[in-house]
Image (tube, rainbow, N blue to C red; front, top):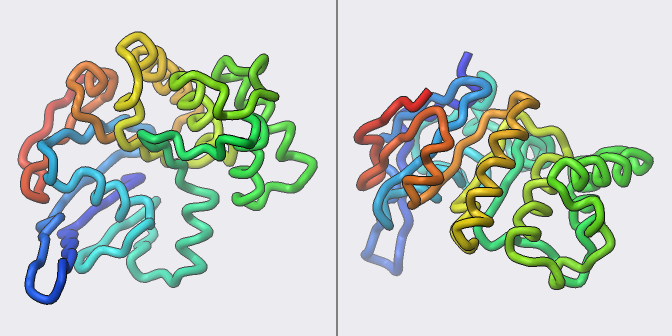
Length: 228
C-alpha cells in the first residue's frame, strides 16, 4: 500500500472575478511507505500546492488523496486537524519558529498540539533536540540561533510527534551551502524511523539525497528519475 496516493487532483485558485489559476491539473503521484521523494519544477509548476493538498492544509478542487489508504478528501475539518497534528510533520523554508520562545519550547508546542500527555512533551522534545545535535542550545531563544540551527529545531518540531509522513518545502532554501548539506544529511539520518518524506526543492544537489525525483510542470507530473 502506498503511504501517499494522489489521483487526478485539480486545484484552482480564483483571482478576482474573472482570472483563474490552474495550479494542479490532473496530478497523479504515488509514494511508497518509507520512500524519500524530491519534487522539482519551475516556479509556478504547482510544487508547494501539491505539498499543501497532501498535508491537508488545503482541499483539492477535484480528485482524491489517500494517506495510508484513507481518502482524506472525504474527511471533515476535525478529522483533517487530527491528521495534521499526529500523522504529518511539516518543515518550511522560513522555519516558522516563535522567535521569543526557546528551542525546547518551540518543539514542546508541537508535541502539545499533537495531544501528547504533558509528562511526555518535555521528554520527547529533549530527545529530539539531542538527535538533531542541539541539546546544548535547548534553552536559547530561537531568534538567537543561526539559520542552520533554526532549521534543525524545525526538524525536531516536525518529528517530535512521531509522524509517518514528513513534508518539507525548500528546507534548505534560506541556508548557505554548508548548512544545507548538513540539513540534508540530518534528514537522511532521521529516516531510520521509517518516515515517508516528500520534499520540494529547486536545488539538484539537495534532490540528489532522495530515492526518486519527480518533475512537475504546469501542475502535472511530467517525468521522474529513480536514484536508489
